[in-house]
Length: 223
Image (tube, rainbow, N blue to C red):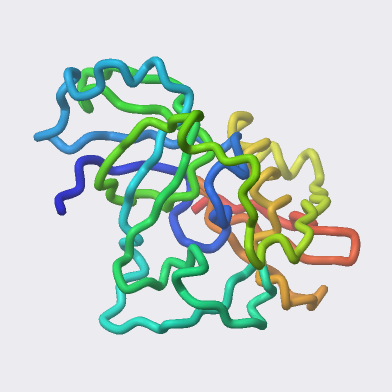
């Protein structure tokens, strides 16, 4: 298969990326088509859909071997489940599937027609193999069960930061960063209040600490 496009996001590394698509709608990504696929005809009718499916490659998680079981973060990394019962990036074939909101279809002079999407859980530069429209009548199943994910109750973290510290970020990035941190990107089994975590977000290195009251941003550095 050949990549048809590349998505550009604020995540320069894997740590911090939401564990599922759609969890942080404030995250904006830009899908730029490869030259052979910069064809407006191929996008005819897409503007009528609110959401799309992205089929993509875990380009930073390729391995020669694979394991039949993995440790899902939702279970705290302490229990193993079959790889086909999870969405782990470590799979026999490194293929990902994400549902994102289609914000805009924009014509540009240098990149052709690009797609602006919200809620993507993809790393910057991820290759995309295909794009398909999300169909509510076929893709939405309100009666569906969530397997082992139904066993755990997810609660967003409280995030605190000095308002002056947040001003180091562009205004259009602040809400997205706070929403990402509320998803608690750190491993759930780590509870060391002295440990300082670092996360690349856009052009910044965000430092934060875990406490019993939530996460506290302690510094934002330009990189």
